[in-house]
Length: 342
Image (cartoon, rainbow, N blue to C red; front, side, top):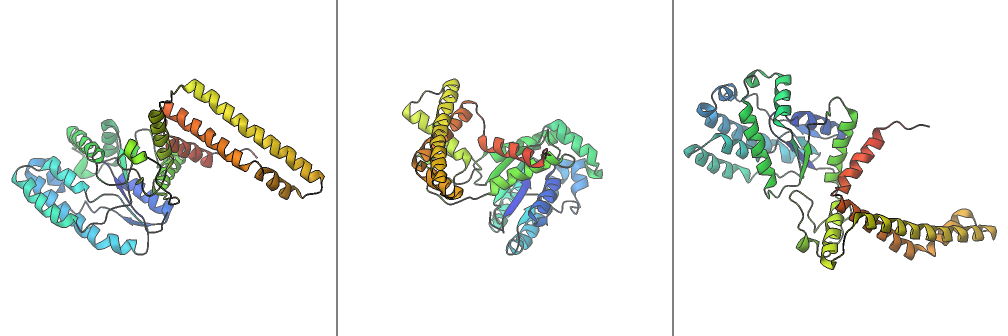
């Protein structure tokens, strides 16, 4: 992970964007850029009469967000990582929800002129929540101008966000459902989310493209480019494509039996290495040297058998429709925060 990365947090009103931005800023020791929305002089009037004050409110937000992004993002990234609690592109999402006719046409012309100068984040964390959860959080934080928030407006906004992030935006997107998590009160939830963000940012070693992956199974929207880096999800998709291409029948029970057979092959090779190690130490060879020499004799076979083990793990995960990368991060996050017996 490079030092000057840029993360934007997005999602509907009340989902917890600013809270997560503050926590990530601490976790990554980065600069923090928060949206200045309370300075909008039309905001209270907008929530009272959306149709009448939509255009003034939206144009003020557009210019304010442009000024903040254009003036701060690049200078900060020159020396530090940056976490922001909003994405500039979301302004257009709100505009299409609130404006119509000539107003949206004028808005589009201004937005098009400004957006070309705005940097693109390395990662967008999209926070989702049910309408009930959003309304509960909005009521709980009790901002004066949100006290008469229209439930149907929040529902429409959530749908607009879902539609936006399901399009091919060209953004690297990590989607997190927040209904069942509490990153403020529960340390395990907080560590889980931070771990998922770290994984989404992680670049890893540059490697060659997996053969045929891009042609057979295109990467989902928001994933890392398949031409640059490989992720565990890439291996899962590639293996599914391989099974389909070769006509391999997948049966979860047979795959589990085959997995154990492959583990048995690894065990057999390790047993032979161990026996060779004992023989070498009895002849006076130091233990560490004997271990290396004994393993080296079986290393090509061990590599092949371990690859088979991984292949059947991937096949079983695909059978169960389990995202192994997410499952692994969640489990290891739990282990990281767990108290172990001495």
